Image (cartoon, rainbow, N blue to C red; front, side, top):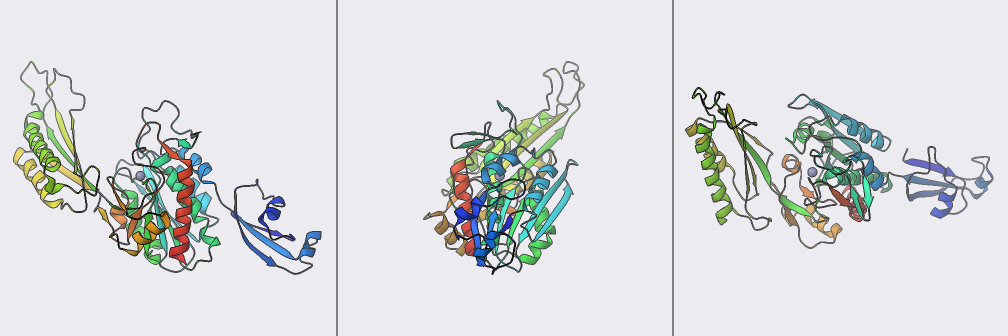
Amino acid sequence: MPWVGAKGFASDTLETALSCYTPEGGRGSIRRLLEIRDIGAGCCPWWQCLFKREIVIVTSPDVVDTTSKLIGLDSQSHVSNIGVADYIEGLVAPAATRLERIEYVDRVGVRKVSLVAQFGEGGGGLALSAHMDTVPGLGWCGDPFKAKIVGDRLYGLGACDMKGPLAATLVAAFSYACRGVEKPLVLLLSADEETDTEGAIRIAQESKILANVHPEFCIIAEPTDLRVANAHKAAITFSATTEGRAAHSSTGQGINANISMIPFIHEMWGLYKELTGNEDHWDTHFEPPYPDWNIVIDNFGTAPNVTVPKSQCTVNFRYTPRLDPEPIIRRVEESANANGVDLTYWSSGDPLYTPEDSPLVQLALELAGEHEPVSVPYRTDACIFASTFPCVVFGAGSHRQAHNVDEWVSVAQLHRSVQFYEDAIARVCS
Ligand SMILES: [Zn+2]
């Protein structure tokens, strides 16, 4: 339990309270003295009661300890995140006013759950957004699910993206009740952010808490190296396939699926050259300034002496807020039609752009001690949430450390990000 009352202490210092404090189940992490009040004589039989004091202290989880526990719970996007969601639910339940589990089955039949937690009553206030899933932990030298601290670095799968930042939002939420605030805090904890953002879509469509509270602002806790990001890219993934017929290539009996795919790929190459080479498509607020047009070609392991039965070309298109994707989508569709290629595509939602002079960006800059916001080249759940309330991105670690073997996050940055979220709660919810 986060709340502990201790009666009868003479001093109003935190040290005295702590010296007498022995909570059930161990000492825990004691964050701050909450309240000292007179309770009158005779309230308890202890001699300390003569001093007529009651001291209430609050404990909350430690951000490094919580990050390490989250890393130990496998929530790669292709497995169920039920275990990590259960852990988080158990952690925040004593402090939360309401909790909501939004369960669903993903596109390949795996059970997933998004969580929404409300602290306090009323409407407005602040939302903190984080995701529970990670990319696959491939190629690690050691166990990716065993957190390891070396100097200032905490290593583990998702340490940076984003079990560290997720832990920071959970720890900050415990400060809510200490603030004497009037408006609610809401945690939006999604599944499948690393794949198709289904967890955030479910929250936006199904959460009764979100519908009732209508937060004024949202901070997305993705890694930004503690910079305030007010803009990021969105993504569209095109998937083109052609079918042939397998046969021994010497017989002439097969149909090679690549023959009809090659002209389509050639036109995708043309779009690559145009998007990366023509500065009309660039946005110098981003690094790199040109759109990402990543072409992936797959023959599913066909041997050289077999005619190719199936060919697939996938293109990941990341674009900035100032680029209209519709003409590009039309050109890909026209190319697919002209070349007899089956085409599907998935969109992450819109890019993020929250104006620099908006109250949220100005507040975030003030709390971070920064003068101007930055743009980041990846997408976040803001692609889903920003149409409902203004969003900025702020978190410990850098995307350059994310999705890597031996991913890590700075312990010092984790602590500073907790302070930032706590300050944001105090300012927005008061
Ligand atoms: Zn992330």
